[in-house]
Amino acid sequence: DVKVTQSSRYLVKRTGEKVFLECVQDMDHENMFWYRQDPGLGLRLIYFSYDVKMKEKGDIPEGYSVSREKKERFSLILESASTNQTSMYLCASSPGTGYQPQHFGDGTRLSIL
Amino acid sequence: GQNIDQPTEMTATEGAIVQINCTYQTSGFNGLFWYQQHAGEAPTFLSYNVLDGLEEKGRFSSFLSRSKGYSYLLLKELQMKDSASYLCAVVTGGYNKLIFGAGTRLAVHP
Image (tube, rainbow over all chains, first blue to last red; front, top):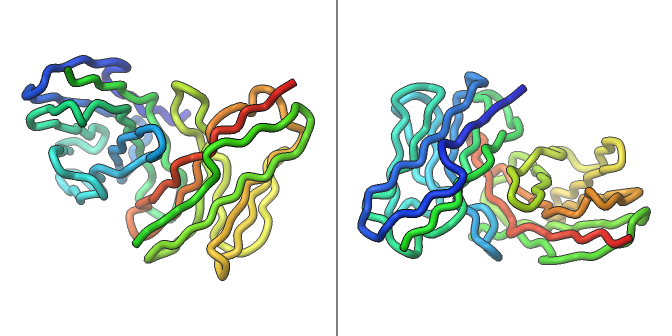
C-alpha cells in the first residue's frame, strides 16, 4: 500500500528559528509536493519537485525553501519561522506519468510562537 | 486568475442523497479530482474526471462539464462516516500540479 510519512504530527517552534519538515514516500514516485492547509483557504501549494534535485515554486513559496537529495525524501525548510507560518503542512507524492492521484501524508501541525 | 468555488458547508440526513458542486476558472485544465478528508486526517482520493459526463463508483459519482467549468460529487445512501470535508482540485499543468478549492464540510445527521 502507498505510504507517505511525515516526520512529526505536531511541532512547536519559536519565531526566527530554522524549521525542517521531512517527508518520505515508499512508492518510488517522481513527483512530490508540499502544501499548507488553512481554514477557509484550502490546500495551497508551496513547492513541488518532479525529480531528484529539481524543484519548482508553487503559489506561496515566500519564506520557504525545499530540498530533494534522494527520490524518496522531500524536505520543507522555513528559513526564519514567523507566526504567520503557523499552519497544517501536508506532503504528497504522485507518479511522474499521467494525471494520477496524489497520495498524502497525515500532516504536521506546526505552531510558531 | 485561478478560481475554484465550492460551498463551505452542507448538511444532510443519513440515507439521503447529497450533491456537492464545484465551479472552476483556471488557465489550464487536465482533469478534476475529488478528495475526501476526515478531520485530522490526510485527504484520500475519490474520483478523477477528464472527459465530460458521469463517472460512477459505488455510492459515489462524479460529473464533469468542461464547457461550463462545472463538476459535482454525488453521494448516495449517506452514512454517518461520510461526514467529512470534500475537496475539489483541478490539474492545471504538467507534473500533476493541482489547484484546490477551499473544500466543502459535509455533516450527516441521523
